[in-house]
Length: 136
Image (cartoon, rainbow, N blue to C red; front, side, top):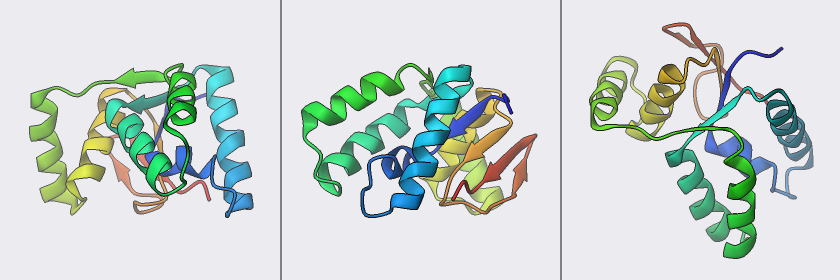
């Protein structure tokens, strides 16, 4: 499968979570596949959330987290604009997403992704051609 695919922060975090080995292996394989096929997408929000959570919750050193983010900038990285915030607010209102998840959905939509891998949203939910998939 080589569809454009968006990764939520939790997928990146599980790749470094030694307390969840099955999820870690699945996340690693998924990330490797998306890097090799050049079909992976993330947003600046995802990278920022990754740094914050990896250094705080996983107790990763800031230097190592930075190196991981350098790797993840090999994905298509999207930066949202003010108009995207308004669209995310509409997604929040219409689908009851948190504003943070709505911003991720918006980023996936404008990246023309077919799949959004996330553990935090409803598996199988479809929004404007985007399917949310729990990879775990």
